[in-house]
Every structure is written in C-alpha cells, then in structure tokens.
Length: 336
Image (cartoon, rainbow, N blue to C red):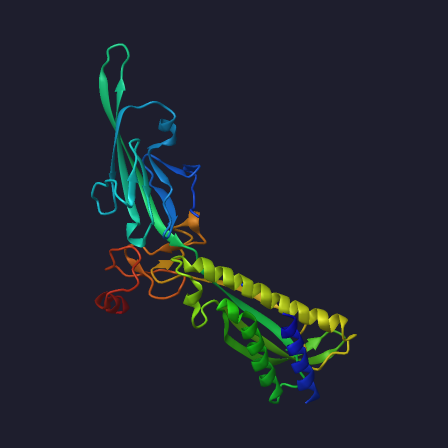
C-alpha cells in the first residue's frame, strides 16, 4: 500500500514538472412449519442442506396426534422416499441435502391422523395438507463502481491521459493478487468553480472493480460456491483502494504543507457504489421474494436469465427452474 501511493505521488510530481439459509415467520430454530391454506416460502442456498420442513402447523405440533402418517409429494408430483439426498423422518420431517436448482418447486405434505372420543372410543380420520415452495438461491456477485477526481493544469494535453493510465495500472497492481481488476474505466475533464478559488480544471475519473480477472477460477480451490471467495476478495480489493485514496489525501494534507502538485487527488472526492449481479439462471425479484430480497433466486418456470443480469426475463415456453436460455421460437414470437 505504501509503495502504491508513493509511486502515484512521484508520478504526479513528475507530470507537473513536465467493494444461510433464509428463515420466515413460520420457522423456529431452523424448523419450518406448514400453514394450512398458505404455501410457506423457503429459500435454500445452492449446494447447502435445506432447513427441516415439518409436516404440521405450529399450533398442531403443540398437541398430541394419534396414529399420524405423512405423505410427501415432490415438485415432480411423485411421492418422496428417503434416499441419499432426501431425508424423511418417522415423524414426517423432511430435509433435502446439497440443494440444486432443479430441486426447487412445490413440496406438499399430507398429514393424516385420528381423533378419538374418550367416552365412546369413536375414531375419526382427519387430513391436513401443507404446501412449501422451496427456492434455490445464491448470493449475488459483488463489484464496485468508483469515482475520484484529480486536479490538472489543463483539459488539453497528453498528461491527463498519462495520469489516467498510470492510476489504472497502480490500482490493478494493488488488487491483482486477489484476482480482481479494473474495468470500464474512463475520465472527463471539466471546469469547476471552487468557492473563493475561481475556476479549477479537474479530471472526473470513473472505474469499476471487478472480481473476475483472468484466471479467477484458480482462487476457488475446488469450492462449489465460489462467489463466497470472489465476494471476500472484492471486499478486500474495495478496502485496499479506499485506503489508497485515504493515504493520498493524508499525504497531501500533512506532508507537503499545502504545497501541492498541479495534478493531485481531490480530498473527499472518492465515491463508491456496490453493484450486484446474478449468475445465469438466477435473478432478483423483491416483490416475489420479499423474504430473500437481496438474494439471487433461481428463475422459475416461465422465466430465464442468460447472463449476469439481476433479473429473470419472461419466456413462456420454459417449464423448469434455473433456465439459462429461451427457445428460439419462443423468443421470436415474443419479439413479434
């Protein structure tokens, strides 16, 4: 970090001289209870185990049930049985291991039990259905849009472009070990009226810090949920760049006794905004998934997401969860 700002300072003088599982109100300690007549939405992080789904509402669970039986039906409308991925207990509790996109959908459980009159021993069979809508989700990929300003002698000349390129190279080197890089960088020169100082020339520089530099997959170390690693790296990259510009401001405010080079960082000009993106087959929908509003939730039937956008697009011919493309015929018909 010290070398980076010293290098930029030297360049400036030279030029002048010349970033879980989600629970709902129907859950308690990782257990999701049914709610008669209302599907309960459950969000499960991709490649993680689901919470425990209880084939019973919370009120009924507080009472005794006689001869209860449980029948779980999966998204494919077939009865679920225990296997390496599906775990169903004798008391009707369901857990799905290593959750994937195609496992999303409607899970229905029918609870059957008896009520017995103490006086007559008369038995009556009672059935209650519980619906759970389970959605795979993954955390969004983070990137950061940043903006800074530098003073300059003039809006004309080669030194503005040279400063821009040197700054980009310094920032790239600062975060290269995190497999992050600077993209979409640009600058414009403007006249700025400063109170009590008249007109000043300033470079308005914008750039994006992205966690997918060439070779970024090598950082995953075999991890399936690599966004955990890339997001951790981009946060570190954000912190390093913030500290870099704080150091610039400190150096010029304390070490040069206000004798600044004509081209220097404008204090308090650093701005940052986080940008979220979703992997193909996932998108955000705050209205539909209010309990997981910040999540990238799997695209449902009738929608798809082909790129790293943050929303799922409409495609009526899609009948699966996690679609990454729309059949050509459907797209053409939609465009017409």
